[in-house]
Amino acid sequence: MNNAILSLQQQRLLLDIEYHTEKEAYRRQTETIGLQRNVKRGDAWFPIRGGKSYYNSLNQLVVEVFRTQDTEIEHNFEYGRPVCFFRMGNDPQCGTKISYFRQTCTVSYADGDRMVVIIPDNGMASEIQNGENLGVQLFFDETSYKLMFEALDRVMQAKGNRLAYLRDLFYSHASAARFSFAPLRFPWLNATQERAVNEVLRSKDVMVVHGPPGTGKTTTLVEAINETLRRESQVLVCAQSNMAVDWISEQLTDRGINVLRIGNPTRVNDKMLSFTYERRFEAHPDYPQLWSIRKAIRELRQQRKRGSDNYHQKMDRLQSRATELEIRIQSQLFDEARVIASTLTGAANRLLDGQKYGTLFIDEAAQALEAACWIPIRKASRVIFAGDHCQLPPTVKSIAALKGGLGKTLMERIVDNKPEVVTLLRVQYRMNEQIMRFSSDYFYDGQVESAPQIRYRGILDYDNPMMWIDTAGTDCREEFVGESFGRINKTEAALTLDTLQQYLSKIGKQRVLDERIDIGVISPYRAQVQYLRRLINKKEFFKPYRQLISVNTVDGFQGQERDIIVISLVRANDDGQIGFLRDLRRMNVAITRARMKLIILGDSSTLTRHPFYRKLHQYVKSIDNTTTDN
Image 1: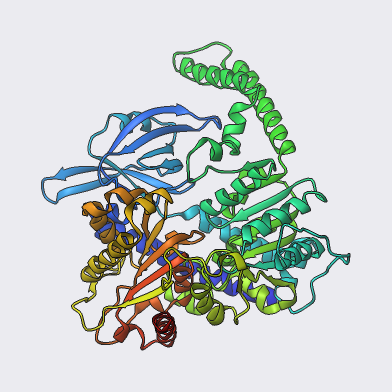
Image 2 (image 1 turned 180 degrees about the vertical axis):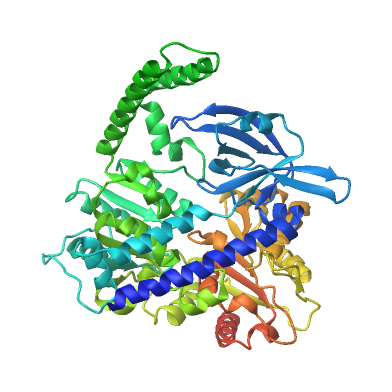
């Protein structure tokens, strides 16, 4: 048995461990964690109000639900995620009791405090619309695991085809095949971006675009996709998250490329909806006719209950006509599209059954489990990975699976096995040079440089672009608030906002508002994030700035940037325990979000026992001293 299949068997075993760990965690969370905790985590809405129900353009019955409390909590509902409805009642013996509806449903849209949920066509809509004390919560995502297991099985069983060839190539040190031609010129790109686009075009099998923070990975990818479309009629573009798919789809659409987005976007606005399959399907000239036939089918079903002549003949005639129209609309939409875009698991959508593509682009590939990448790879002849394995890794909940290597992505595997197919983007356009330098030296061997126009960017004259507010020796102490939330440090949170207030006062209110200077407040811990949000909402000073301030976890800021970033590191204890702050890739994301000013708050006596934080602390202090000397 070859090395690739043995390694994939190992992957499947680790994925199985992760599956059971997550399923057990969900069961425990549902049974013991308490409804209020789930609401605070953003995994449940309670109470909810039901809105209208209707059949969407894909002939699915959907119902609207609205969140009526805790609207300030950022929730985790998004397209495609399974959910279950529940009713809160009083049990004479047990007190408050939650009873779950029997069938699971699927999120179609989630936007702010409104959600549209696909439900079974069995009277559930009226229960939701008329019920009292109802709520909805995220359900364990069995489907995604099923698709990943199926993908791994298919890859292992592949023989004598393109999928088998790519599998064996990815797991070996054999050279990937390339075309050979003179480089094309793209004067609007920098030299490393231009080289990356040329390498994409030359690759026959696989290529990796490694994009450190702020280096224009999306710009490069859009150019590479555009150039590929000069040679191929259609490409498949995937990413791990809906948000990443939305972002690349939006950039491609702005470039004038016809994108067909399978699945619904995370931000529900006309621009984002305009390239979704569902909205395009609805806008097709044949759709009104199809809608009338579907309505007639539903009415005929109702009449059957009352006894109707020629039921089967009428039904067959209507259904064959509806199928014919559906196929015609679908074919036309797919024929017109140049880019098909979906999440990795979304590539298993029945709409893509039997479709084959010359090239698959996987964006944010360093955040995706290997098994998820294999879902779309089986539809493609060659694969282009784009991402940064020095930033956020995939989420793995099982420590055993993580230690076994489940967190190692397919992109990382190829970077290790085939360094010759990797091209690094080296010029960053986001950060002041001093903010960028530490990350470049520590994570990228000093190879990333700042573009000249942003090297000295700053908000105030003679300002220090990086500060570390040391909480050592103060009464800033962390508290543990449960497994799912981790840690909180209330004194440090108050100090974080005091520091931000002082800096904004220094800039001046009018200038902040006129120039729309935006601010990100980051903490690795969800409890700290929620506490900081509450403090900002209470504090009168921040009222005029609320539209400019975002507070979120490190993961919530992936792919984003702000003029000012303030980081609250939370950990402060006598043992030097720093928990998951040891995941340095997360810290790389946090410290590289800032364009002009980075302020870190942390207890140096706790944090600097770890070599990374010791180096970071020394680096920030050295900048401080340089600025003071000047």
